[in-house]
Image (cartoon, rainbow, N blue to C red; front, side):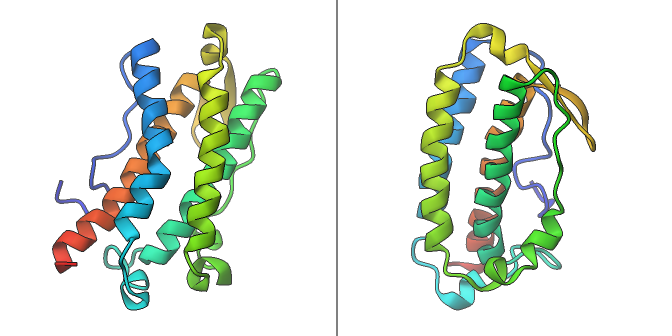
Length: 174
């Protein structure tokens, strides 16, 4: 893909959902923390502070963004699973990425947080009964969606951001 914003392509809702597709998506969520850790393993501070694209976030901001986003995702799943068609709260990703912790904090805390969060998240996802996948919520920006669609979004999301860093490394010969 030549579009630096979408190195694996923009998100597309799958045409169907079944147990095999769900398990593949859960496996991607399960693998995301290790994939991210491996992708940033030997980067220097200067490399961590390099934007993945012109006018884009730095690698450090991307690393901190993933647990920020996925904490929100985990809560969205919990709300959809425990309330009747809740409306979730969105958040200003760009503003979060400009906070001091996202711009300057060492990445290890976010790598550890992502790992712990995904451990709980995957346990929850693998325990869902069939009926849970059709439960729904409203995202004020994206409209109504099911737990199946949420799963697909966040499976894609982790791969998407790891690919930002991977492609930057490839382009810069790191």
